[in-house]
Length: 75
Image (cartoon, rainbow, N blue to C red; front, side, top):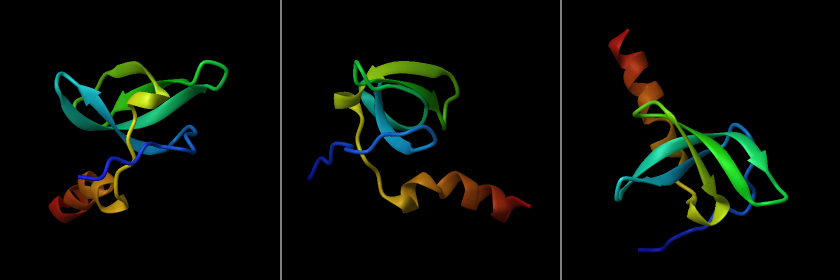
């Protein structure tokens, strides 16, 4: 498995973050560039995290938009 570290992290970006020994989708809410740390909103579970940039991973666009596609199908 190829692990891709995020290189360009800005507010609004969807990424993968480690949560309770698993990975979940998160949206960057705030970035602290001087310390390479980020405030994240957990997309699937709700809640917020504060993590270093080294913990975040890039995910494919398809995986970041699955929730939106499912909601559109339910309408």
